[in-house]
Picture 1 (cartoon, rainbow over the protein chains, first blue to last red):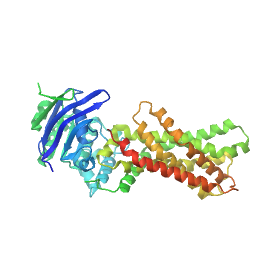
Picture 2: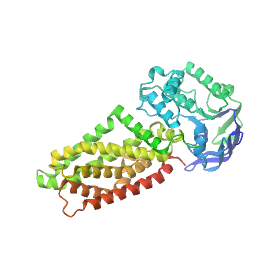
Picture 3: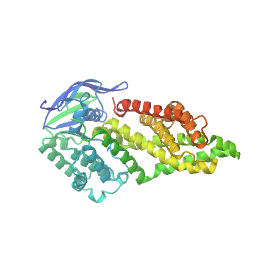
Picture 4: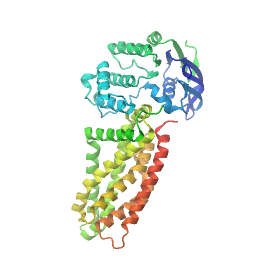
Amino acid sequence: MSALAVEAIDISKRFGARWAISRLSFSLEQGRSLLLTGHNGSGKTTLLRIISTAAFPTAGTLKVLGFDSKKQRDSLRPSVALVSHASFHYEDLTAAQNLLLSAKFLGVKDPAATVKELLERMGLAARADSAVRQFSAGMRKRLAIARLLMKAPKVALLDEPFGELDPAGILQMEQLIRSLQAQGTSVVLATHLIEQGLTLTQERLHLEAGRKVSPS
Amino acid sequence: MTPKISLLAAAWLVLKKDWQIEWRTRARLTALIFFSGATLLLFSFAMGPDVTSLRAHAHGYLWLGLLFASVLSLGESFRIESENQALTGLVLTPVEPRAIFIGKVLGNASMLFVLSLVLLPITVGLYDVTLTRVPHLLLLVLFLGVLGISAPGTVYSAISANARARDVMLPLLLFPVLVPLLLAAASATKLTFQPDPQDQLGSWLKLLIAFDLIYLSVGFLVFPKIAEED
């Protein structure tokens, strides 16, 4: 298996007539982390979705942990996790029910105990039995992170992870990112908080209109 | 590496999740009961007080009530999957898309089956039909019929879930496909309400089974393409 966490070779992604990603090539070694920057609409979210296998390149080849993201998606998916603008949660289930569902799909050995531990870790234990519909944006983000932690991914994709969090939450998120990195997880982090992002990552990729450019 | 649980175990979890959501809100089933009950009532008003005529067409009205309600039910089934892109979340977890298809079909079919059981006494009250002639065969017809609505319905509701005019698109796509099923289900139901001197019920049941198998197979094959973005 390749020592690269992510290897993009000339990838492009088109939505209708618009190219969201255009002939992009880059690589990221396993265990290292990447800061993804760029203005709104520059292609950051699309790139994260492509790496997560939520979408696929229109052209080019993307390998994640040595697996072709399209042809070997089934092998890749257990090792990659995405925290996105969409939380992927069911609004009418409780926080605990949402996590328990993921735990059962993932085949976690003691799902109830794992869910309890993760909810406590993310500061959501008191609201475990509340429907996600009643959650604030920050609480939804914490729940999404809990789901990511349950998966223990080798590549963690975080799209604006500091958005909607209070100062304590931002600090906790930074600690979580560092603890993921300490376990050898490669983190790809898209954020507008560039100074904060630079302290958490070793590499940087700046996008403009879906193309790789040098940050100004 | 493949998902850690089997296809059927994952399908069971999807089905259980749908009923868990329904149990928490009780919104869908309640709305369906009132909607289809009102539909049956309106049909009876439209036909007038002629009991013989009402009894003769009861099977058709029952299935039209179920068909119209199924559009609401199927639409709601994928609204919860579209919200927060939950369906994408399932696929990335990863859950095998075919397991999602099986779970959603069974979830939709079981919802419509429960609805059909609620509608039976209403049908008796409004149309004066007899349910006790061959009740086990009536239940079988209802089960095969709602399964036949749910198999293509799950595929089309997934396709139309993100469309701009999804409420219009789903019946436009679904109703033409369901014509043979409606014919078979209504005819078979009629033969459970009334005597079957020429023993035709078996033929209609075979047609229902064939319809179900065809659309379950088609859905099983095409659903992964629908559940995943290109």
